[in-house]
Image (tube, rainbow over all chains, first blue to last red):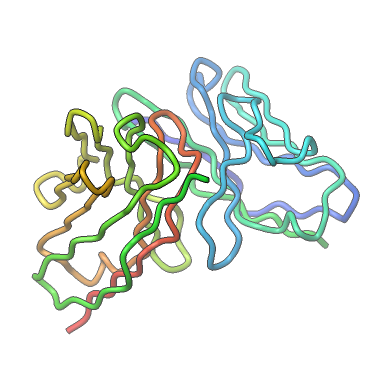
Length: 107
Length: 116
């Protein structure tokens, strides 16, 4: 079955750029979606279809997807961006599939 | 505005069943799939299955086949997820979420605790 691999944690200073990766075999051929989840809250969609942003999501959040890696990029990181981030794809063998999640720490 | 409002927390004994509801508002209920996702404390998101509210068609993750049933009542725009033969490992927050390929709106979550 298909597997999505995320780093458990990423740390970044305020104002810098955070990059969270999501690895999978030929993931570039799939549509990747990203969710932000803060403690005690439901996930929030921040990027869909690799690089599109839902309304209300700041332009600081962007996505890319190529080869075996998809990346969520958060520019000019703020303290309020500290959260867990999950990538997700739809795969014919696994249907909805989530990555293991990455905890973003703002130093 | 789109809202998914879930039923309240549940405490169940091992072997029992639980049924969680998800009431949709602010959009046409039958136009979007409903997915169910769960999250154990301190763990990641785990997809359980989907339901098409229009047709009633469902698809379940292999892990939950035979134990989960997803249904709906279109007259009250409500989706349901029933999980049977509960065990302690099923203790988690259960979410409903709208959408097929991606989930743009989520319920607030329902904590299900399985304990003897």
